[in-house]
Length: 64
Length: 571
Image 1 (cartoon, chains in turn cyan, brown):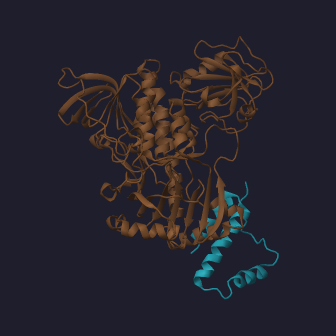
Image 2 (spheres, rainbow over the protein chains, first blue to last red):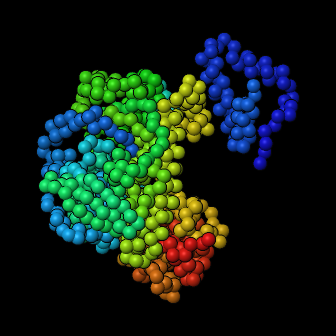
Image 3 (cartoon, chains in turn yellow, red):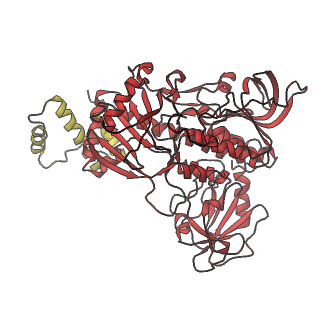
């Protein structure tokens, strides 16, 4: 079983971050919420592994 | 019935005006049963019966018929004098139909009802996807049959009336119950006063508010959902197919859900989510209901309201279903939200599970502890049903802003992405439980593929019996323990003193199979059971798998049979 990768795993983190912010350009709060939710669902399905997903949810929830 | 209907908010709207020519025996909504003085008044000591069943709803009737078929003397007590008011439970699952088949009343239900397999889901004004609950051929029964509850009860009542050893007593209300491990003492109140009975066992199938449960100071606990729903049964000629249609946030009923189902007699059920703030008294009035229906159907469809009900629901269950000699079944024991049709269907499965066990215990063929396995198996099933219906309810009626955001995200993705369709939950429809951890199972010692594990309900398939007649496998088993042996050639030596050995021959070997054998005419049975020559299954009277092996070994079959009847439990 795999575990959540939290070590750096992106070839170009700055490209990803820019794309993430760009995804929300010109959207209002409600639209952004919906886009974020769809993104989470698409990525969750791509990951598929329930253990990895639970681990990510735990980390997401416990950060201050 | 899983929903708790406020009886005052439930009303029949001119149910007979539409169909004045309906012959009397079929007019189950107006049928009244006359009170007859029971023979047990004023006896000392009071009359004793092996079993009393309380409540003549679907669960009580199925239980009473199953016991009567086994030759037991049964008294069925009901506080009322009529069948179900309104269509209520409506959706009967394949497994329920199979249980009814075993009791001899499946055909009437299927013939009168509306069979369906397909469900469609709409988000706002668009169809997003559809599902087929029975995508394969080779089953006698469809995934579901929709039929007004009063028909089911009417047919069951007529079936029950054929048993001289089953005494149905209308307007006989249980008003007091003393429970001990040995027997129950029951006070029954009738229009002409009270009398007392004793019984080895009392089956409480007296519904969600179970008076028997209250008499024993027991509780059914769980989660109450703060939402109200409106059922409008309308009679009309409509072009919709016999499918389950579910809308999330449709333009004709914004921000809420709507469910459409076809019933018998050109009646359609429309189920509108109303929200918690809705006034149940106001919402059941035709002035409020008709515009809601019109918004869905359009202005040019003519319809009549048949029955209207506003309901709330809860997911709950009793901690234990058996309390000494009082055993709870159906809504008395557990309740679910209606999305998934898991109320009446799980209640019928309770009855199916209990009937053979109680019969064996009362005949002295099994220890009383066998009845505890009713609790173990059906409490597990109740948890499964509650989990599924709670999840469906949380999807259909999101309880927070973010929950709504995710729900709508799933729905919007589902139109183009197959993965999201799997997340859409408009109700996970009733399927029978596999009793995975039942103490009655003999764990596998050989290797098998597929779902027919110990504890699983067995699959159906077409078979040929003597004289080349086509039948169904589930017609050949059930009601008693059966050993099923898959074999290439009929083996006259494969016999057991304890039970029938049913041999399954492959197609082509014999066109007229010998006694106690069937031909797997399409090869589906072997495929569904992952069988090879020699594969042996021990099946319970309720058509669940008790054990399976790759070889027929009478000693191992007998050990598994003792275990499945509670006589030899592994530590």
